[in-house]
Length: 463
Image (cartoon, rainbow, N blue to C red; front, side, top):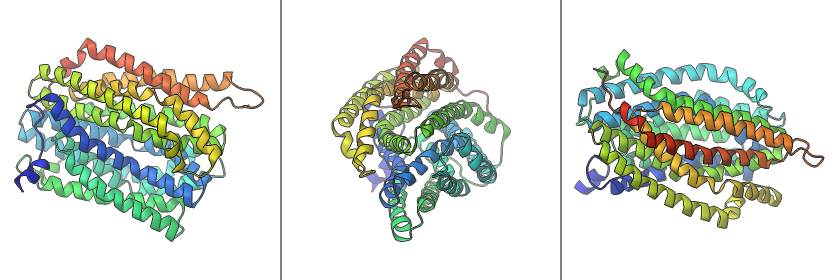
């Protein structure tokens, strides 16, 4: 029992071999991210198999709009992880409790606002990105249900961010696995059994995410030995809310940038027709799993850097960064090889249309090498965020995404127009993404080496 309790307890990443702490923390986080990715992936598989390729395209077209509307919660979750990890590393119970309270309160406000404005802006946004008339109603129904039921998504992300900041990546994993299993069962029941179609997968996702949020809240309620989790803690405190926004908004703006780029490129993708839209959905689903280790190592390094910065161990941060980077690049190299060898089998899961599988595999080969570059970007950006410098990664994302990917995508599409491809070659979408990833890795490495992130290491101004 003692060993089991230790397994699910917060982890102090300021002691022990850095590589070992990074691996211990990353593995459950990786499994959790894979489970999170399963939400949308199972939606796509069930829709593609039971409803058709157009319905699959509808779910894919809705995702850029969904990401854009949910970016505020990414900001709050990022700020939460940074504050919690640094205060936990500094062993400051009072500030730790107040920062967690600020996260819970701000999420309640943001979730309510999204429930009110989301349904109003959904269809105009879908029209703005040239969503085909054949799938726009499905897209709107899917998004409407997710917006009205966003509390589960919102609070799971915030609570799991808090748990990660405390060094506990395993509890959130267990809760996510439970809700993922429920999501799969409900997807099949609602779509194959009750014939609810696209709205059915959205409803299944809302119910499953709500369960994961409730389980995380119950776990936090049992951690009274580390921080106070009560009504008084939830009282809004201006200094902590501002601190949370100061740390989180740059990451949130980074996600806004990505989302705007996704929406803009989705608009270009939509002009190529339903076949290319469905292809993009399949590639992005496989891409989501391929990118999971990179995101996991990035989040791990944020917690690792935050705790060690809180403990004033910059030397340990740098040592852990070198070791974490080596592990992440190695894992991404293996994943790239797997994609190149077995990608076609993965594509077949989503559709039985041979031409669509062939097209998707061709696009996937373009992206494959980019995952190694993204390993570098995610690890180094994670360290900078954990230290409190969330602005630099934001600017780097702005440069590589807005000023590189979008112009290249549209430029290549324009230059490759022909009688066979009147809108340009669809490869332009994926070539532009690869170039953005590679340049992003180079620029992120340069800024990490400059070391300005060390100057923003400690949270000093909140009392």
